[in-house]
Amino acid sequence: MTTEQITAELTTIFRKVFKAPDLELDPSLTPNDVDNWNSLNNTIMIYEVEEAFGIKIPLREMITIKTVGDLIAIIERHTAA
Amino acid sequence: MELTFRTGTLDDIDFATETLIEAEKGVGIRSSWENIFSLSRQEIKELFTRVLEENIPGSEFCVENYLLACDGPKVVGGISAWVEPGSGPGSHFIKTALLSKHAGKELWMKALPKLEIVAHGLNRTPNTLQFEDGYVIRSYRGNRILSALHKFGYRRYLEKYPALTAAQAFMVKGNMNSTNPMVKQGWKIIAEKPGPPGFDEIMPGKSILHWEIDLSPFKNPS
Image (cartoon, rainbow over all chains, first blue to last red):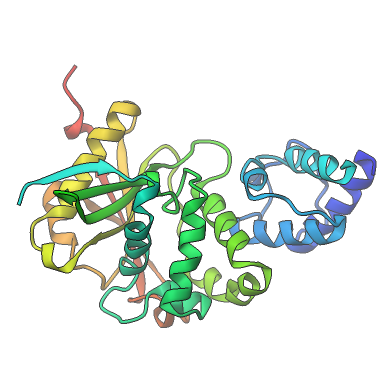
């Protein structure tokens, strides 16, 4: 998958999970920048990502996610494998 | 009785697990964790053991973040302590990642409505020392062991992070057995946050007290 394809899928997930229908994803976005991106919703978002991309994000990678860009990089790594 | 103090190691997982459960019981029989996940005491112990074996720092779910009081080789009291990150994932993100991965999706999603109730209003201040889940075994209570553990924590973390200015803790109102020594030490309640509907069906009280202490009196004069 290309970065653009991943970002498009991720945008759909973020808009749904964080209830932000107009959200535009930018690699620099952090939880502080997105309403409702709290720790509980973060776990739901990760479950949705795992299902949509058919991957499993290991715990130790999950806790390194500081930005949308970090998440995109993890998805790229796992979908390329 | 001559107490010594140390930090936890992976050999202390059983005591840390006991602390996580007992500290959340208040005067009730079931801990809030049993209520949240609708699991038995044994199942919660097994879940916490798996979580603690990960040994990921940054929240109360890391055994190396535990400050322990020992009478000889016997661990008699403990409290978790860590510095809330100033950037990157906060302790709540680490804690929920650990719990959700080890609980599994089905159990996590079932517990989510209750987790949303208990997480309401729990915002930890970045770059402050956080204390959570203090517990002393019954036969050693009344010896101000939690107070001594707090002081051990101030010394330890101020050595490592000299810029720290405050320590904080959240406690359920009603679970007040250990707060008198805290007040004597200088802790103050800086906010009381009423729980949302259903809070007191899960937790041992109706609201959360946010406590803070100024750490400057505990700093070594330079």
